[in-house]
Each structure stands twice: as C-alpha cells, then as structure tokens.
Amino acid sequence: MTDKALITNIQRFSVNDGPGFRTAVFLKGCSMKCAWCHNPETISSQQEILWKRRLCVQCGACADVCPTNAIYPPVSQDIWQNEESSYQKINRDICDSCMKCLDACKNEALCAAAKLMSISDILEEVEKDSPFYDNSGGGITVSGGEPVNQHAFTMRLLKEAKERGLHTCLDTSGHCAHERFERVVEHADITLFDLKQLDPVEHEKATQVNNARILKNLEWIAQSNHEVWIRIPVVPGFNDSMLFHKSASEYLAGLSGNIGRVDLLPFHNWCENKYDWLGLNWQLKELESMDPFSLESLAACYKEKGFFTSIGGSGFEENRPFIARA
Image 1 (cartoon, rainbow, N blue to C red):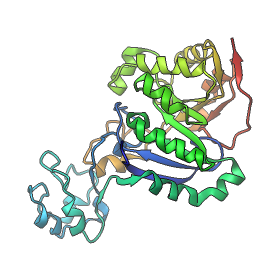
Image 2 (image 1 turned 90 degrees about the horizontal axis):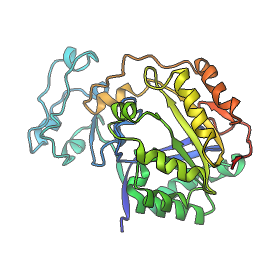
Image 3 (image 1 turned 90 degrees about the vertical axis):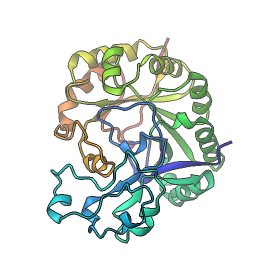
C-alpha cells in the first residue's frame, strides 16, 4: 500500500476546479503528453529538478557537489539571463536527481518539482481552509497529472477527505483502466472529466495516446449516478472549430444519464516558464492566449442542447440541476 505520493502543488483558493473555494492537490505522473499541457511538471512520475534562471547567480556551488558532473560550470550573465538563449544549467541526460545541488544552492534557483507527502500531510494543509469551504460549498480537488494512475493513493485520499466532512472532486483525463476509474470515482462527490477530442487520430497526434479508453470511461460515468462536469480545454488549431463543438455537443447530448455542466477552458500560455525550468522547449510558447469572449459562439452549441455552460469553469456560477437523459 502506498503511503506517500509526489505532490507538485497544493493550490489554495482555486475557483475553477469545482464548486466554491477549493484546494487543488496536484499529483505527479500522467500517461498523456498533451501539447498544450499547463502543468508540465506533473507529466513525469519521477522527481525532477527545476532550474529558475532568474534566481541563479552562477556561483558554481551546485556544480561542485554534483557527483555525475551533470551541472554545467558558471557562464557569463549575458548567456544565462537571456531568455532567448538555449542555455540550460543541467545536463538532464546524466542527472540522477540525487538532489545534492538543491542543498548547495543558496538562492533557491534549483528546487524539487514535487514533495513526497502522506495523506495526513495533505489533508492537514487542506483543512486549514475549512472555513472557506463552509461558506462557499468548496472542498478538495484531486488533480494532476492523472490522479487515477495512482489509484490506491487517490482513492484513500478522497475517502479520508470525505470521512473528515470535506466535499471532494476528482479532476481526470479519463485515460486510465476502467476498473481503477470506477473504484476511485466512487469516493468523489463530483468528477471533472476532460474531453479533448472525439477523433482518435487527432487525439493521438496531440496527446500521444488513443482516446478509446477515455470515451469508454466517459460513457460509463455519464450513465451512472455520479455527478460529472465536462471540461473541454479549447486549443487553437486543435479543437477550436465550430464543427468540433457541434459534434461534441451532439455526442454529449446523446449520452444516457446525467451531465451536470460543460466548461470551456480557453488556452493560455502563462506556463511557459515552467517548461524553461524543466529544460524543455514548449512548442506552443508563441501561441497567444485565447480571449474568453471568443468562445461565446462555441458555448452556444452546448447551451442549445440544454447544458449549463461556462467559459473558464468558475465554481461560483449559478447552480443548475442535472439534465436527465434516457
């Protein structure tokens, strides 16, 4: 039984990850590699080192303690502070993540991407915000990465949170074994389910996985008694066409069971620094963030099918009842 998991962030006062004020817990590890991923530090299931160039003074202390010589020696300021430069501090091909460089760095330019935490550690942090949950209808949202990839830990986390009287949300891509998905969902008051693309070829191009497993899990949960909110990350050139959203709205309307709402999440590029911290070149860094108002016509597709639809996914939107479908 896994007692601890790597947590990249515990984000307080989140208003876009379920109803009310929420505390979002991000688990490390994902089976997908979405081109637009806003949390690249959650993709790998292994611990990683972040290098924040703006905090680095090129003192060389990290290189002195590195046992594998994975840290490059100091360079001039015009090289390392130039954000257009391809210079990186760490040779990640030979870095073994021993973390000795973190202790040597006095400016916190090098830091761990995640923290190993127990369920009690996590819930101790989450419960600090209990007064805000009581007043807003909020609670804990378990996200990632893909939290169902660590199904035993996630299931225990959600179960214990509910036992402590917390409202629970599971934020999932749906790309996971159905048996595990079914067991974890049982402990979530609301499941936030990402729908990225219906076309399997287009889906695999952008995420590196087929969507058959995802659609199977979506169709199952839509006809179950579980509350599900559909979340569609809208990405230019991938799924921002009217044709896609007409098809998606018809697909969702055709599912038997209950769907609480549909949230359209406009693409943004505010995560570019994270890719640089990981030594990655983000292919979408030049793509401009989408204006939320530009999604109004797309949102109309879902509203016409009777779905309560938001742009941005605010948990403070007007509550609407489920839509029953035979």
